[in-house]
Length: 393
Image (tube, rainbow, N blue to C red; front, side, top):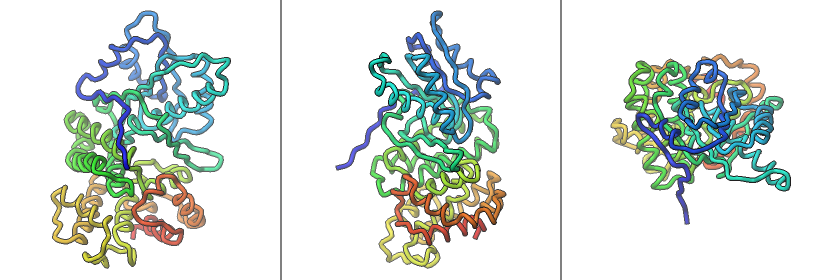
């Protein structure tokens, strides 16, 4: 027996921030990044809470790849403030930080139940990038900077009660961030589609998300004020998030977490660079090359990649040709978005990369996302995959 559930109530479309005006809370705890405060963007949120007696606390110590130290600091602030509602405002880092703060605050509260008045605190996520889908997932990724390791947290306690998707908040996102986050959406959707835990329900969301990315990402990248493209990408991000929250992901994200934690390359760019190589890796069960793939093989993964090609209107006379054309379409997308074709092009040091191939591969395999990868993993094959991804071959 399988299940598909969605806890988060999603508000989307033009003017969806008005939802905040309907809420009646006295103590609001906002988790965001410094830019949102310095630019005044946070006022779009604060102004929606109209109660005169509202007490507001803003935690803006959010940085990319949220470190454990910041989470601990946020927990202390939240416990002291004791809010009625937590609002996460920002990209994946801000929402992941807020999730982790709420999770560990609840654990501390449970341990100190005699001293802390336990209450249900509403959690609202408002994304300002179209990429992570974090507003609807039970994932949060935090970083141990001393070890250079990213840890995915997975718990239904991390799910937001409400998500508000207002594309006005992403209108001014720079083109290179639009590119990276948009490719993160595509990677989420494709990995969810071929995951060992994929279902008819997650496939439907993943298929739609993939199609919307191919139809709208370039427009959003080239014309940031194209609100129709921005809205479509915002919705695609959320839909991909719902899909992978249920189906999980694969080795693409397993490696991305590892590379990001070690070399601090942006998560979306890392996923984008990996995606064509991972598709080729997963598509064929022998000789690690789709060019030797036989259509008589029982590779369901290759067939699902070919189905994606068909959905996108790419020529698909055979499974092998469908997979090849999907990879070519993704490579063209990367070129148009000015995303590197390899880790070498991205500027990673070859000696450092090669010296750590074994540990990078093992950490990638051990990542929780990799457990649902459609192809079984061994360290030798993942090392070869990393070499190809570094050199661009």
